[in-house]
Image (cartoon, rainbow, N blue to C red; front, side, top):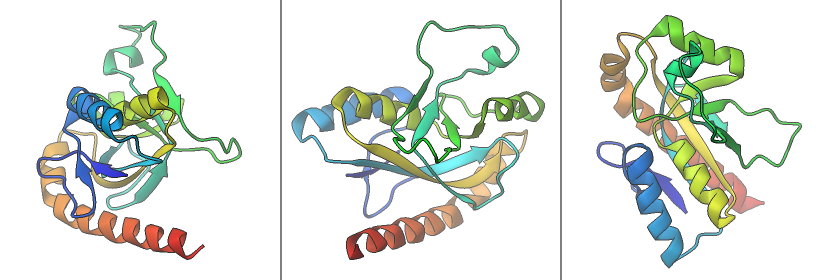
Length: 181
């Protein structure tokens, strides 16, 4: 099953699940209860913490839920805040951080890179958490639309349509490659 966020981030070959952690969790759980998929592939846009460039494509099976306060030792969590469906331990994933907020503090978000976290997407942690609960293999494909700085929203708006086209072409090509095997 190929899924996406929704609202203005939809694709003709993906099922929208909602924006943010909560909507995604609720809707994806409902979908898995009624018709459990064999595999979940989430596709969407992402913001870069600085190393990845506009329109780069990232495939990952690892997500985190780390809030900005953690980066300054202003918060902690007793919860497991990193999850991975990557069984190939020789392949190191770019970790995708998820929060219900878009980061705009460039200096603070660069600290994510020290933890191996390279990008942010609002929904991916929820996708992997639901996949883990239902024992479903899962992954994600992302296209960079912005950096996590004061221009994040403007850059997202400017780059979003092009990123969606690049992402759609990439996913369709990968699906074709897999069906030829």
